[in-house]
Length: 268
Ligand SMILES: [Zn+2]
Image (cartoon, rainbow, N blue to C red):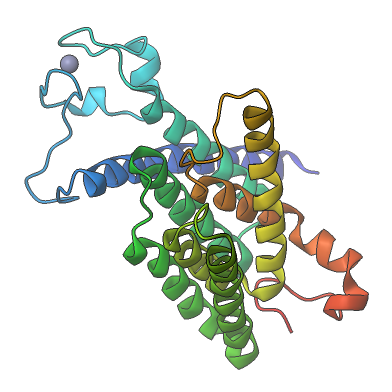
């Protein structure tokens, strides 16, 4: 590997980290405003969650401001909620890791759409237990629009994914009467529409596995009652993100069931 290509790689990784952190900051603000029923733009300015002082550009640098200010508001000294830093770090790490995984490609575009929208929907679900249909379906719409580039087989793969994602959760809701909500079904409809039906199967599986690994120990330790409402959207989102990294490998393992090794994201 030559010197210049190594510099190119380093610049690409740093760009992905910085860009991802900025996008994470935006997604977090958008999620908080959506929950608070405020507009995303226009006259709305970012302010301290505690004292309400309008923040200056120097206070709004993703990650950097939090570190320089040692997690406290410059004006009132109240600690800045860790969700700001968490959203920025998670988004930066995911964006850079997905860029490294896929390179500049259609697969990267679909992967970023899935992970960014899933972060937004997870944040609203964690904050008030609500997944906004519009922003779950927006992912599906964006995914299907991108699939047009792959022709009808790619679009069909997405439509089947949307139906499968919605259908599986709908059956669980109807059978279990509670536990999962229709927001979870709409979220998987959006994710399935973007990733296609094969990736959707693994997203559901990994999502349930992730949820079980967290929820079961809490229930066994009596920290959680069966009736407690747990947001499940974030687990489904985690499942879909895991699949963005391991999906091709899994499809190859199950090729006797799923058919020939496909060229994700468009399938074949
Ligand atoms: Zn303040």
